[in-house]
Image (cartoon, rainbow, N blue to C red; front, top):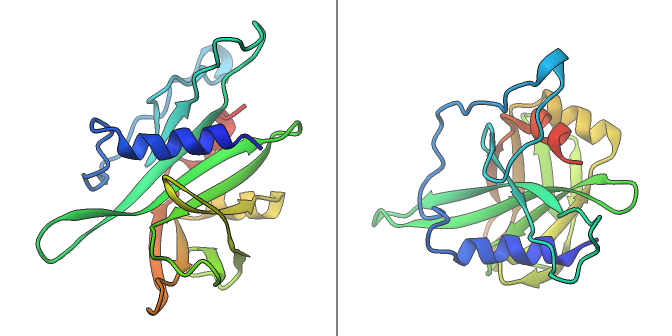
Length: 191
């Protein structure tokens, strides 16, 4: 697994032009246009798949000439407090990792989350889902990884919302909605 993609995602949070202080808009985003005969054109950095944004890491200067950058989809969920200030609640990253390019959902929790408790993801009103625990904490927050087997991918493709449940230290469980609009096309675009 490439930690570099995760670190870059964390650094994106710190970039002043990244737009993370703004609530994601609910307006529909255009899917990348299909090429001739139904083939999907290769996505470009910044392309939108619904609520998901396509991003690729830069290659190291000494990378082999045939090396390809690691690409992933991400979205940020924010909340607004009583003073009107917006704060990041979650950063969600969808990547394909390893030699077999299996999809993994990385959820970055905010600092202050109870790292010793399970984090659960469910789709829509389903009671079935995945549970995992924090595997590391980075600049972007504390990361929880969910390997997406074929049945989980199917559930995500059919769903409207992914719900992430976690607890802050000393607090009650929080449920945060992550729209799945564009998930299917975005997952297909990841190579």
